[in-house]
Amino acid sequence: MIVIKLGGAVGIDYASCCKNISYLVKEGFKVVVVHGGSDIANNLGEQLGVPPVYITSTSGVTSRYTNSDSLDILNLAMKGRLNPLIVEQLLKYEVKAIGLSGIDGMLIQAQKKSAIKAVFNGKTQIIRDDLTGKITKINSELITMLLDLGYIPVISPPAYDPNYGAINVDADRTAAAIAQAINAECLLLMSNIPGLMTDCNDVESIIHYFTHHDIEKNMKYAKGRMKLKLIASAEAFLNQHLKKVIIADGRQYDAIQKALNGQGTIIE
Ligand code: ADP
Image (cartoon, rainbow, N blue to C red; front, top):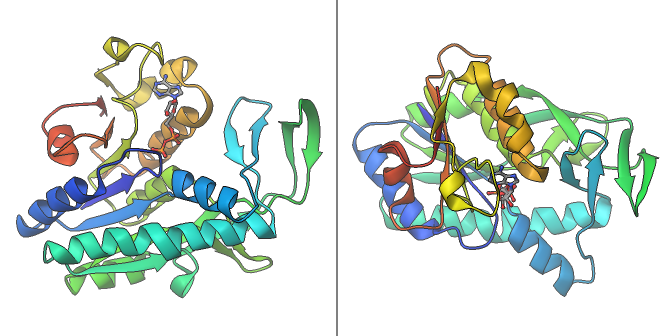
């Protein structure tokens, strides 16, 4: 089983990624697609007067500050725009795709963080009203049932917290949690960068390979949201069925095929 996370940043070639996914499905692989929606959510937020606000935790991890208005925007962007776009592309390639958000059938359960210590408006503050959380459980029976029936689930945040309802969770960590829960062999994180680079501004500085024992060692190169991709990778490797994580560039034609043929950063 392969879990493929399609990033939500500018330039991802969703059509070509979906075509590559259709080849994998035809070859007999069971594929779960997970997606974010950062770029679409940002644009939609600007259009609707709810521009995005980012906070940076004291450990340097950047995340979206989510209140009920920005959660609405995320829902509209993911469930309303990007999810149907991906499902539609997959259907076009005769893949039986089914779009689901994390709250459908309690697919992704999470617990809202009670407080986050973060830099907000230039000051370190304790933020208590942020509607984001940590994933606690994946409804793997639902995913496996759909896969067994030949459906390809296309999944996005938000997740469901029994005490708060819908809350935002990170899409990379969602993909990792799903990979872990369904015993996937491979996790692909398709993004808007060639892979993990020692210098963000130099594509030649890409690190092609390291083992999961060295994720922590390579964390020093990751800034902002790349940190979450490495944290997610480490979480996915908690299940020994996982053989590799690939962080690769989703902006190019045949991106998934190229990633599976050795492009990007491979973690084994
Ligand atoms: P996605 O929407 O695909 O999940 P993100 O914006 O969350 O993408 O994460 C990818 C971003 O991480 C890149 O756009 C890049 O600016 C940033 N980044 C930070 N450190 C690194 C690094 N060492 N190598 C590559 N990208 C990095």
